[in-house]
Image: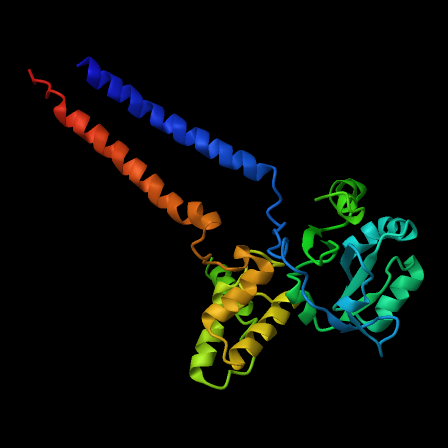
Length: 181
Length: 135
């Protein structure tokens, strides 16, 4: 009889165990933004680019035009409100010499040029993806997005949303300075 | 109440029409594959809609890309791999079975087994209980 009683107690513990597991998963999910999708590109070679350049449409921008070393690809558009938020920060990075390249996503040429005249141009070069096809290759789903590519051409990180000092110092700077493995 | 239901029906018809303005693909097989994919691929902007229902600019671009792939003779797996390589498992409403999606697929089954086990234990215990005598 005492053995039976013990088994009943074990069964009573089960809901508590299930509850704990649920609390764990809900707890993990609480701290996570479900609209941020991890990029499967991370850890793989960056996709090829072959697009016209915004400031010189007769020229084609490709990976060969990127200077040696790690670099950043910032996806932006004049219609993108988050891009206004991060622009001051990008300007500061550009002035400090950060290798930022732009991908102008589904934008009008005039709109994009006006935006740069108004707010300044932090980019070393800007590729124009007018129909959005190249951006699909990069898995872009919302501007602004910023990719970090290391000196070997491997995508190391993709940031969705306006870039800020904290994430830049934590993730981008070590790779850009060649301090990480 | 009836007019409300009617209005709702009209609204549903409007949202379902995002893709229906497109010209059909060359062959019936291509068309049905294309439609099947649109139902199963998530619009990454409006994340609770599929490509067939969404009229977001990115959804339109992705429809165009999928359409081109199907026209060029891509299989269902080709298109799904294309999406997985770029947007990850999240892009598919029915994710493939992989180590990182195992919990997603096996979780409900595991919970069902635990629940059935618990019910069986309780039933067995109750059946072993003596039936109280009535006065």
